[in-house]
Length: 113
Length: 255
Ligand SMILES: Nc1nc2c(ncn2[C@@H]2O[C@H](COP(=O)(O)OP(=O)(O)OP(=O)(O)O)[C@@H](O)[C@H]2O)c(=O)[nH]1
Ligand SMILES: [Mg+2]
Ligand SMILES: [Zn+2]
Image (cartoon, rainbow over all chains, first blue to last red; front, side, top):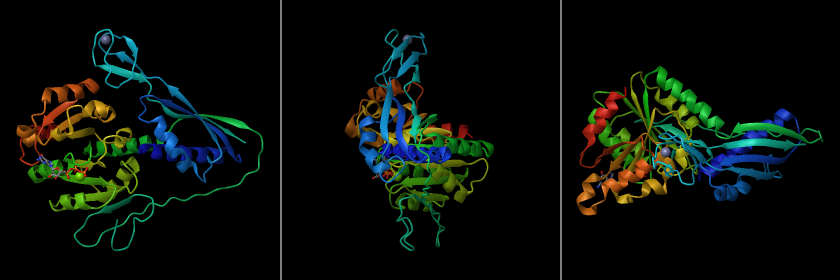
């Protein structure tokens, strides 16, 4: 399950930021996850307690902002929401598309004290 | 895992070059340092940082190294047992006398696959990821250091058998190759679309079984193309060698 690597990556980044900020603790963390990022919300939820145990994030509350995927058809320029990677253009049925939103996998911000 | 010295019992990956006598070791250790500071006001740190940034940065570094040395690096991904190692064995046996090849084998446990490659006298490093379900770019960085590949060569990376997790982790490869065997069902590409979306080449393996399975090949290819219209297909049998010639022609053109 790659969500564990992702969660451990988050812990690493958070640790560095905490030290940089010379703060004592992280109170909350805001994540941004696109629906086409490859991360399953349930899986991340599942591994989170394991990943943050005894780390700087152990006591932090976690907020996740999900971003809906959107694509632009490469044939007719129609912009449409993507639910499945293999969705075709609703206007011309082409499968050639550029998914320009929904691949986000970011730490937006940390609240430290 | 090394039976001789017991390395690889920790949580990090073990990366071992397979040699005839003895072997070298690389260990990765995680160190935790915690410092106490005493501040008590609340601050919001705006980060906007990509979580996979570390992996992506090192992948870019690998890619730069490969470009500079004209090394063509392939990342082979598939479900367990689609035939990645068999496909590699066949390719190496047929081409290794004309071109220099290097191999990195990724598995959770055992050096079985690396031993199969080593039997063909091709330089190979086994990466055991332990609990990890995919290779990451830092493992490739370490493995490549051990392999010290020549300029103008091929580097074949066999990822851990897993059609989900390796999709997210760029290794710095030149091209990604997804292997699917016809025993897996025509709709595999839309069940596991991420992997087909991020690949450049799709190898359809075990074609020797087609007389018994009668798989609808158009359907399979159509599903894959719906996910990724740019995929290049090769239909092969690693067992009989059927269809491999076209793959070799493509491969040789890349360097
Ligand atoms: N009939 C047939 N069997 C094949 C073919 N290619 C591989 N196999 C068999 O499929 C099984 C798995 O092959 P491997 O090459 O070990 O597969 P893999 O993808 O490397 O497996 P993992 O590394 O465990 O993910 C073996 O029993 C092979 O003999 C093929 O073209 N035709
Ligand atoms: Mg294998
Ligand atoms: Zn369109």
